[in-house]
Length: 501
Image 1 (cartoon, rainbow, N blue to C red):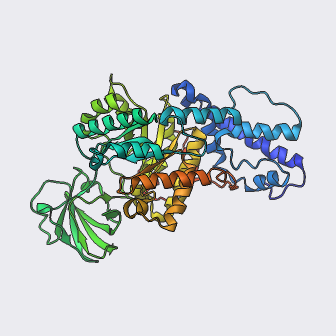
Image 2 (image 1 turned 90 degrees about the horizontal axis):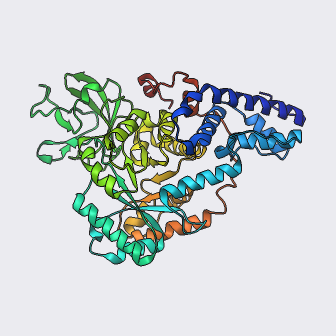
């Protein structure tokens, strides 16, 4: 593509080439649209246009458009073809009439319709949807629920990994009573626990470890090890450790302990401890385990999750789906609901496979009338690396905007303020960035009312600024992988393991 453009004719020719390529790719992926819900037909095509555009380096074209005072396509994710046509109309001075094109006006209507359908109406244009995780300590405090609604909460999160159906019922009852008292509607979001991969230690007692030490990890129920004189650590997910390979990383306790697989001996993985970020070199029972380099085969829907579905079907407005890896996981959840009423599915992006299969996950979601995405930044940061998190969370926001799929921004938003009553400067900046999402999730905490109020205040201040930044397009790994994979197959093991650093 030309580095400079001396006149509008050159820009016109380049823009026509781009448009023709987008139309070619739309036709190539025509088979995808057959099973898409009618409400997603136009935005599904827009998603293909956007993904195709993001396989290209159009910086020069953008600079040329900008120099001529035209849209540089930098904030047109939701209506790519409509924006290209609008520019062509200016350059050619001809009106373009094309059917089923996602225009700016259509995109605004479509996005707002899907956000409101999923999360309910916002209190004002400056407000964002705020989800708060319920705490059983609040059950005898009706004023707490009313206060949360009054300061801006409009989605209550019930985590099925904790408590029991009786407590969940009390949460929902209190929320509905508070909603009636305040006149403020509130949606119920219920999170499936998913296959939590955690440490299992003998008698639940912590073990002391050192850098350079080797330990044994196993997912088999055995009291004794393999004969090697290493400390034994159990894993809560069965038939997992024999899927590991030498050289793959294994993280414990939210990434505080880093190890690497040295060798596999039957059902045991020998791990070498590479680093310990904690002040106390101890590994405790029930701590999370992450395998960022490994392609593991286990269902995202557990037996416990299946037992929760009747309650969720009857009470929830949305269901959060943990550890989604590919589109078959979404299909499995639909099939398991069966004849039960199925609330809209929110897929949680928290592992490498979900990132690289993300476009196909969205197309699977678009078979339903309503769906959403949660950026679960806790596990995701460990899986992809903390340095890449800022980049990946932006890519997810852009791609979801192209698909007109609402996004929930989650994990440790204003966490220090929530726990201590005092916010750090960095978390205020992070909270401001979360305004690019459609909903923000807060964890439970003793200062939760103050935290919700602060977050809405930040949203009010950011409301007039968030579209002023001018972005420059470059190729995205996620988009390139999807568009170039003409067979529409899920990401291979090699693709995941060889993730660019």
